Length: 315
Ligand SMILES: O=C(CO)COP(=O)(O)O
Ligand SMILES: O=C[C@H](O)COP(=O)(O)O
Ligand SMILES: [Zn+2]
Ligand SMILES: [Zn+2]
Image 1 (cartoon, rainbow, N blue to C red):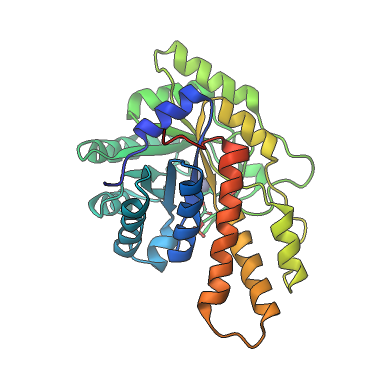
Image 2 (image 1 turned 120 degrees about the vertical axis):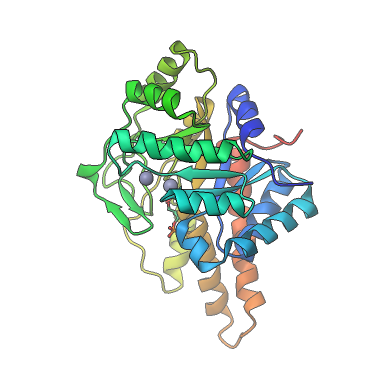
């Protein structure tokens, strides 16, 4: 039993009109919380590691824990680098046994993004690893880079076709109105589904069939977690995410990978705050971290079952 790439997962998800959840991991409790949900729902899952996570927990630790999860559950699990900033980071993760890497060159000009992505695709494909790239700029905060709403730009469908052809990437993250973090919309939530449809139509016309699209910044910012945080001393105001029905619609289209981190952070924080507040004399980390882990399981199970639709994708 070994880690798998996302190739087979995406083929099935595209055909089946659902998406695979890609959840950010930073420590053992988060990994266990997600994997337990995937096990209960018999679902394939992607565990992804940001640059910040690589710094917090060495990739060797993360890989070893994820491999333990595969051995325990027998599930299809891909270990993915999220927003790889450069060739070196992507190469290191490939060399550490990741099965998928993202190179995020969206902040470079177009030709530079093409050239850098291609270099990583060549290195990865020679080693059986798949690559996700990004075109268009999402608003919000990614690692240290903050893009404000007016500097965000949606993905151009013609450019997407040219990009996929020239780089040979395996999947593409697009900008259609989602953003990273807990504050996604000031007013009404809105995604550009026509653009998403046009990207797929143009790819199909160019002979690139069933091409998997990735949606970043897809947390729903569940009010239950926000309220729980605030009830136990948190101060989270005006947070707003992507409504579940929009994610369902995206998953039914070409979106095969849906990225969520903020929702997990909120759940973990809410549960830890509550556990500490309710047991002021408690000092056992297994108590409050265990509560965080349980709430992550509950949250991820709900996403798999009711939002992204990947339940029983292991069959
Ligand atoms: O896209 C993400 C990680 O790459 C996470 O998005 P959220 O901030 O919406 O959870
Ligand atoms: O894309 C951003 C993810 O939420 C990861 O966040 P991080 O860089 O703080 O680990
Ligand atoms: Zn980006
Ligand atoms: Zn992202």
